[in-house]
Length: 184
Image (spheres, one colour):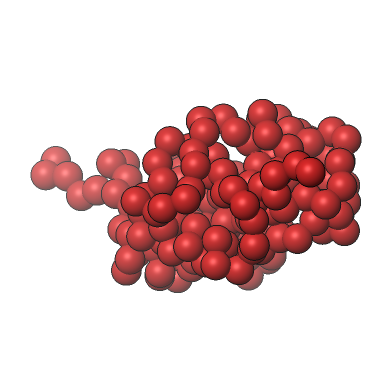
């Protein structure tokens, strides 16, 4: 009998706006076409998302920009990992990356999202959820063009923050050199 593995990944660690989304996933059936979510087209991710939801046990955990600003990204990641491990019953837990944040019984692997099916599935769950949330926010905050850059610190996004200022969907604790005041 195979080991019951919970794959864990996140989406939205680096953006300047929107939530951090973490996903844990235990696959109950094999799913063809799984890969690192960043290597799949948005259409393929959406199709796989629906199949993953039907063929797995999963948990999604989100942290708002305010939680990220208050707690820090590392604390949010640690709390998300603990939440997933508490709510999904597996024999092993594998997180995509290189740090376990001091959590016992958590294994890590760099680029696991492209190598291990359960982590690929978690990657897709997190990315699709993050992107859907950002597109929904774009309707309420059209001045930031979030649907184009998904909240990441692109040159255009930074220009729009300079023009319109920060909103409640932005992470104000993230220091962006281009937005820092200068003496000249």
